[in-house]
Length: 180
Image (cartoon, rainbow, N blue to C red; front, side, top):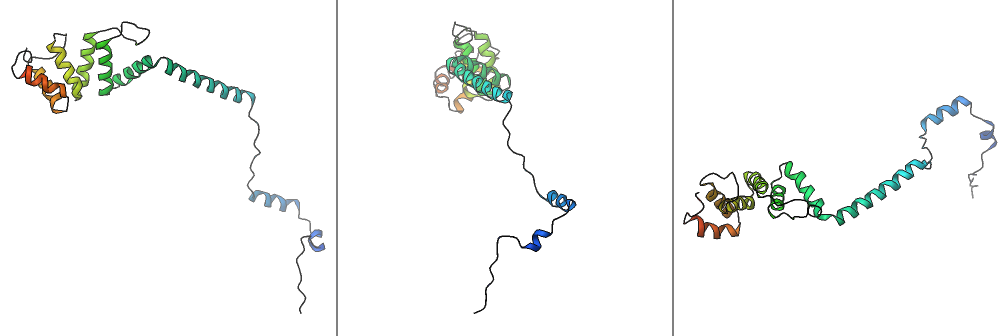
């Protein structure tokens, strides 16, 4: 049986006697990727993280506590950016008002409501077209021209506003208030 030689994990004498030069060590180190050790963050980073968490908790509490006010101001921002649904929501806020500025945020202002309904109706919002026409027929101050109320009601009716069917068939067909 032939003799099987096993490899030893210990280096041989020939390997130990050959010590690499300093230049060879530098070349070998350049090929390696050095990963820096993770260091502890400075105190001001930790303080900033804690402050951000506290600020986030305060903002969540504020949004929960003042939901109406947050909703109003969000609708105002989007309405000014030209979003038709936000303009419709803002117009309803002005139409109904609250009388209490600290809670819901706006006083009742029919002229401002009709102005926002007009902006939304011009973008094709069917409910705003209906509300603008009904406001005109009820005598509120609007910029609706003669005969335009009937077109607005018909637009709302064609786009699924169920109340517009009733108004169109009872008021506009007879021509009582739609044409003035």
